[in-house]
Length: 235
Image 1 (cartoon, rainbow, N blue to C red):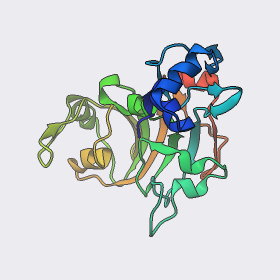
Image 2 (image 1 turned 180 degrees about the vertical axis):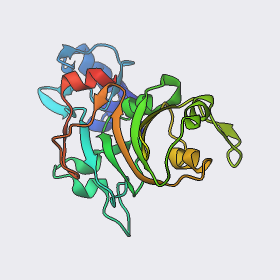
Image 3 (image 1 turned 180 degrees about the horizontal axis):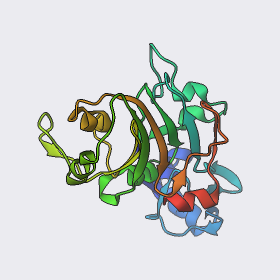
């Protein structure tokens, strides 16, 4: 979901129901403020989070919102679903239907999930070109051996999509537990990578995105807004 970008003259024309000639007059009379400053450029581009007033009437005052959730198993990363409870259903906030999901976790996965109303932020965060690492704790059915590490680091070819995954980091924690770091998110990528070793994934938990770690004080299903310091960790 992209944040809307629009020229100021078009925005005012639509919001106030006036033609562009009248918009020019409003600006000439210094009756329009954009982010607290007198607006005089009709070609100024604004977005969803630009504060706009006309004659002290607030036309737009939407604030960006960034939410961390500890997603539980059994809940889908979707805004609506006919069969399962969604992460949006878990939110107890008035603006929940304005939010979208940043990097989904599947039904049987848990851990750090981000939600926002800022489309440009989410697109940047999830773009493989920006190489923001995502760290997962993975529980396997069978023991893990050292040869997994080199195979993950080389990347794997997926013939169905005709793509080769970017190199992934793997750290063995115990016989059946590993940490995997990815900078992309192909369809069921971690499960498919371990599938090359015929080793089923029985637990998948996202620990962090970039420098932002899941708040372990959040019980599964709980969420909270990110702090300014936490946003800096992930931007």
